[in-house]
Length: 157
Image 1: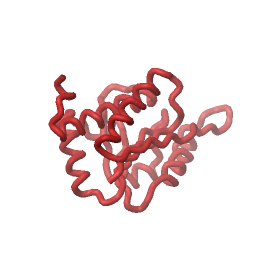
Image 2: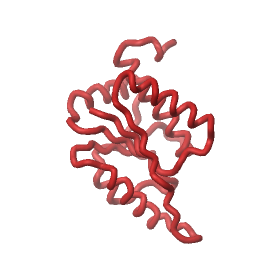
Image 3: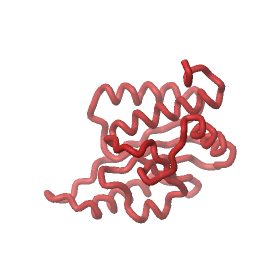
Image 4: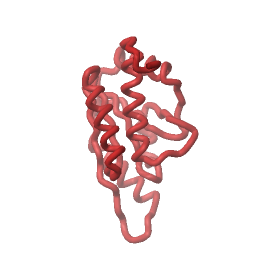
C-alpha cells in the first residue's frame, strides 16, 4: 500500500512547507507516501463555488486509479484520537490492495461526484483550518500514527 495526499492549491508559507517536508521525509521510513498538489481553479472574475468544485473534482479524479481507496478530509467526517487513527491506518494497511488516497479540497469543499466516489470522510477537528495548515497537521498525524503503530516514543515524548 502507498499513501497519497492530494491537495488543491500550492502552499505559500515557507514555515508550513518546511514542516510538511519534515514529516513527509520522516514518513518514508514507514511507508511510501506522495504529496500531489493540484493547481487552484480560477474561473472568471467572480468565483462560482459549484463550478470551482466541479473543476477541482475533475482534477482529483484524473489522479485516481481504480484500486485506490479515496478518503476525504472533510469537516463532516469521522473524528479519531491519534491512537484510533493509528488503528485505522493499521487496518487499512492490512486490507487495502491499492493506494490509500487522502484529499484536502479547495476552500469550497468537494463536488458531489467526489463525495459519491469517496469511500470515507475523516475530520481533523470541528474547527476550521486553512487548507494549507491542514496539510501540515495531517502529515504530522500520519507520522504520529506510524510511531504509535511501531511503539516508538514520539507520541508521548
